[in-house]
Length: 176
Image (cartoon, rainbow, N blue to C red):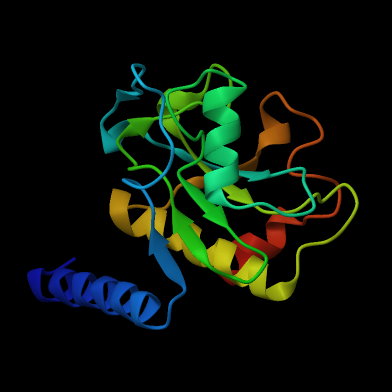
């Protein structure tokens, strides 16, 4: 890749982010969500990351604040387990910095990024808007780490019902 093409690629990434911010499709909540009083997540290098893991909330509704409270108060975690939450309305919420080694896939948190789609995809299908936003969130991760990563479901590691039977990860891959 030439220096000029690298600059053009970086400019395109910035343009897409600004467009998302202006249109209200992206909200950074990293410093606003509930956190544990004393516990903190460990950090990691972006070079350690090789996989994006798709989750579903397993709930009919919800938002990053509710998920963060649940993770802190019921699991006693340092904060929310996901790096991004994607609402049914297509809004992408950044919930952790990618350097944060948060808890979302037991024994695989060092090398994965967690994206949670709101909904119970054992009972329903995500709408097209939410799938498009999920693909966009994956693209944001790719842009930040500077390379393409594997995309897997939580079920591919250790949670057979997550992200549910009614979500087709291939559709997300195709939308990227």
